[in-house]
Length: 333
Ligand SMILES: Nc1ncnc2c1ncn2[C@@H]1O[C@H](COP(=O)(O)OP(=O)(O)OP(=O)(O)O)[C@@H](O)[C@H]1O
Ligand SMILES: [Mg+2]
Image 1 (spheres, rainbow, N blue to C red):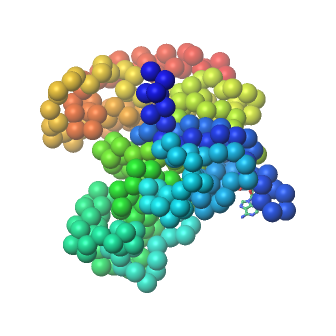
Image 2: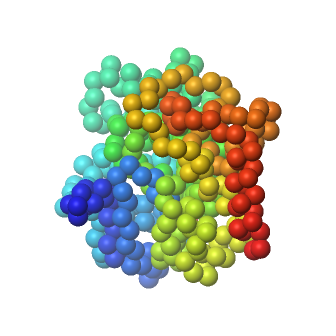
Image 3: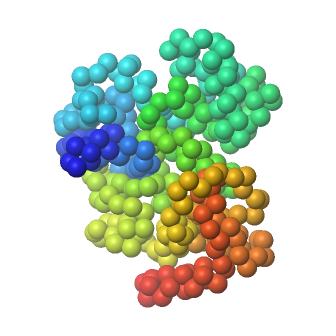
C-alpha cells in the first residue's frame, strides 16, 4: 500500500530552500509532492518564488538546501541535460527562436536528441494539429508571422515535442487577451486529458489556477501557505493569507471550482468513445460554464462528455438548484 503511494509521486520536494547571492530567500523550507499525471499549479503573487521553484526542478537553478527527487531519483545525482530530457518547459517570455520556422522551433529538442528527420516532421505535424494549427499553413512560417496566441500554442507544442513525462509551464498563457487566453486554456485541458503528463503550472491568477489545477500550491514570500484541491482551497482556506488572497472572489470561485464531474455518475466502464455532438458539456466544465451553455443553446437538457465518452445527460433545473445551493452556502460572506 505504502509502496504504491510512493509510486504515485513523480516529483518530491523536501525542505527545499533557495537563497540567491545577496541574501534573498526566494524559497524557504518547501515540501511538496507532485503526483504522477496530475496538474499542480504553483500560485502566488509576484516574487513569491514560483519561477524559482520551477527552475530548481529542472536544475536551471541549483537549490541551496533540501532535496528534490524526480521519479524517485535525487536530481543532484543526474546530469542536468539528461534530467531536462524528461522535462518539457514552456515559458511566457523567452519565446520562440526568431530565425527558425515553426517546424524548426517545435523540433528543437527532438533534433538535439538525434531523432531522424522524418520522425521529427511527423511529430511536428501531429503537435500542430493538437494545438489547433493547420500544419500545411503554419509549419514554414516564422514567429513574427504569427499572432501572440499562435505563438503561445507553438510554445506549448514545443514543450511537448520530445514527449517528456513532465512538463513545466511558467505562465504559458500570460499576456493574452482574456478571450484567446480562455480558448487556449480550454484547448489545453482537452489536450491534457489525452496525453496524461505530470504538469507543474505557474500562474498568479487564481481563476486560471482553479481552472487548470488538480491541486493548487499557494505560495507567499517563498513559503507554502496551502496545498489543496481547488474546491477545498476556496471553501476551507488554511489561514488568513489564503483567505485574503481569495478576497471578494469567493462566490464566483465557488461556482468555478464545482465542476459537472461531481454532479455526474462515474464514467461507465467499457463505454466506447463516440463522436461528440457540437452542443455538449464537458465533465470538467464548471457550474458557470454549464449555465452559460444552457443560455447559449436554449436547451433544457445537454449531454455531458468526458473526453470523447458520453457520461450522461444534465438537466438545466438540476444545475440551477445546485447553483442555488452554492449561493446559500457562500451568500453570507
Ligand atoms: N536570479 C536571481 N537573483 C537574485 N534574486 C532573484 C533571482 N531570481 C529571482 N530572485 C528573487 O527571488 C524572489 C522570487 O522570485 P521568482 O521569480 O521566483 O518569483 P515569482 O513568484 O515567479 O514572481 P512573478 O509572478 O513576478 O514571476 C524575488 O524576490 C526575486 O527578486
Ligand atoms: Mg515568475
